[in-house]
Structures are given as C-alpha cells and as structure tokens.
Length: 118
Image (cartoon, rainbow, N blue to C red):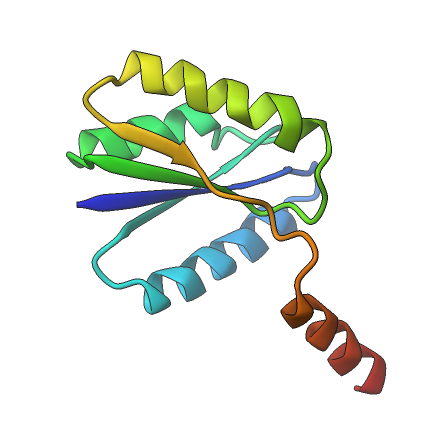
C-alpha cells in the first residue's frame, strides 16, 4: 500500500488545522486506496515524525512526502529534505520520497482569476 504525507507550514491560528484537514479529505476522495496523513512544520502536535510513524504503523511500503507550499523557501530547500532523509534512515523498509511544492502552475493562476472575478 502507498501512503502520502501532506505537509503544511503550521500556524498558531487553530482554524488552519481544520482547513488542512479539509484539503486532506479532498485529496483522499481523489486518491482512493492511498493512506493520506497530514503534518505541520511548526505550531502543531501533528509533526512530520508522527505522520511518518502513523503511516509506518499501517504497514505502508512507500511514502510520498508532499509539501503544501507555494514557494521554494528554506523548508523546501533544507528542512523537509532533511526530515525525509532522517526518516528514510529510521525506516529503511519504507521507500520515502519527496514530491515538489505547488510552485508556478497555471491551475493556481486560474484560482486567482476566479477569486478576482468572484
């Protein structure tokens, strides 16, 4: 079974976790058969470690770590790759890889246009 760990920045505002849980539910609906967990880089007890451990406990053989970040900042360049390497070493039986950030994508421009026109 394959799993996904979606990672967001995190915030002291409690509604951000509920918003990310809504994103998680939408992704789960589009990817039946995949275990989808969420984690935050800070300001939450839902850490990357807990997300990876949760997937590992489910017997997941492959985990794709996907950052929910727009830009290539320090979390994308250093922090998340470092965590992926750390947990890949801790769980050698699991193939842990990292996906790209949201970045420059025409679909994001479409969302902005929708917001502008709405």
